[in-house]
Image (tube, rainbow, N blue to C red; front, side):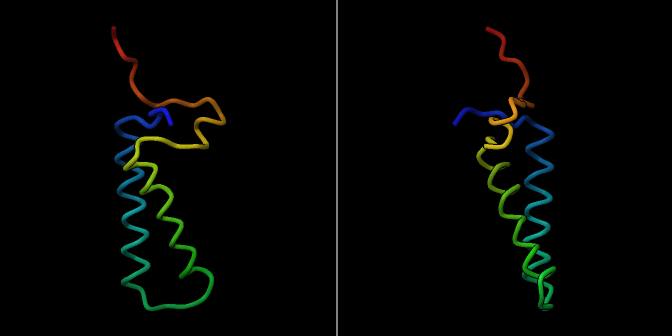
Amino acid sequence: MPTNVGGIDRILRIVIGAALLVWFFVDQGSGFWHWAKLIGIVPLLTGLLSTCPLYSVLGVNTCPLKRG
């Protein structure tokens, strides 16, 4: 997959994804909202891999232009 997630977008995805996962493991709650925090896996992985399948479908690219 092509890289389509740029710098600030990537950092925000990693921070938000990690925060949701930490919150999931620290919070001992139960129910839907406790398990909903696992959605943090998605932004964490897309940030770490610098690619977002939804961005590809929508034609969005937040990477800076490459100068050749």
